[in-house]
Image (cartoon, rainbow, N blue to C red; front, side, top):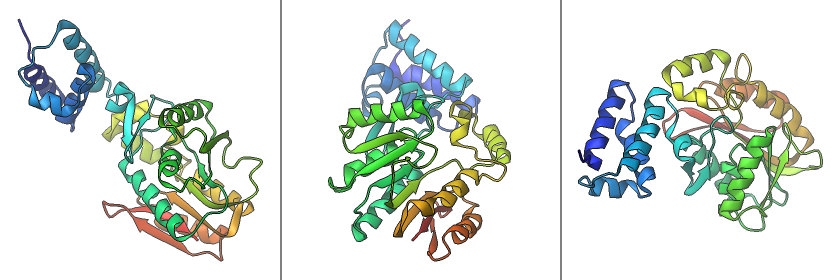
Length: 287
């Protein structure tokens, strides 16, 4: 019996809906496009296409992993779009880039337009390298960037992305908990550090079981979710210039606590909370 693209998609979407997968249609279309080596538009425009046995098998295997194991689509296809660029992502090696983090990139670019950076821009906890490499694309070519991460696997993936995007010479990747040992000063520190508490993580896992496939260390930071952020702020005065700036992504309920930490370690600087596109407190700017 011949099975068309539309038939298999309909079956998959029904299975996904039964399993309470909120994005069944989108996920099925993305995975079908991946199997066919086409784009989603092709899948929507050719519902009558008869699939081969190999294509049906490949899609079914992926779909079962998505529905039964809750593996995120980005890990299944190995890539995720971020700020107009495609990034390689791998399960348990890096977080999947989030849309709200694109807004952090926007904040950095706006800041640099108004405040020329004469020293390297430092990103802490680079993961897949998405922030640093997006900045490499849009910052002036004279701007140098350093990206650190404690995970060698994450750094290897970030370098792979840099090589694929042609920015390997623009960004220096360094294994470090926070700052490279040879860094003397920087005008700008950018970071999207883990900010979930243990309690929040457990609750999030129940609602989004896909999180089990992402590295827990990149999500959770102590009992209150603030350990990594406070550690960065405590160390930052040693490397940040007097008129330098720190830009952080935070949890939506952490604004007041992070502001208090900022005032503790940078009493002379102004701390501003910036809301994201969903009107949640999402970023802290210290300058």
